[in-house]
Length: 122
Image: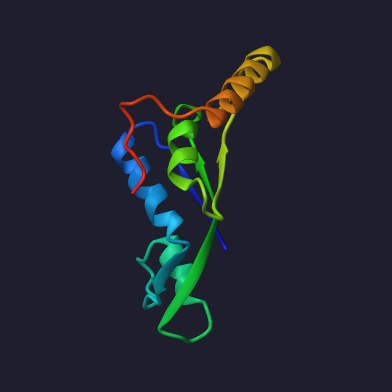
């Protein structure tokens, strides 16, 4: 199982929506990469899996920025993929009061539909 994260500050609404739609499909195909010293760490990890040409991995959850919770919740509604968010991200140096307020806001966003500027699920 995989947990997908979409936390980069420069991600657009479209990129978040596309990521959620891919996660909703539940099965992600991963082709075995050839092991090389210059491969990215994720590619090296896949290359260490038992010898097989292709794997199917299930997406368990999607972690998004607090401002994208409502969008992700709407796009993943009815699927088995859970939605999570981060509080006090990225450093966690905010006060407890600020973290509680951010948590309450994220919960409220999960309960209501996103603003109309967000993309609709398909």
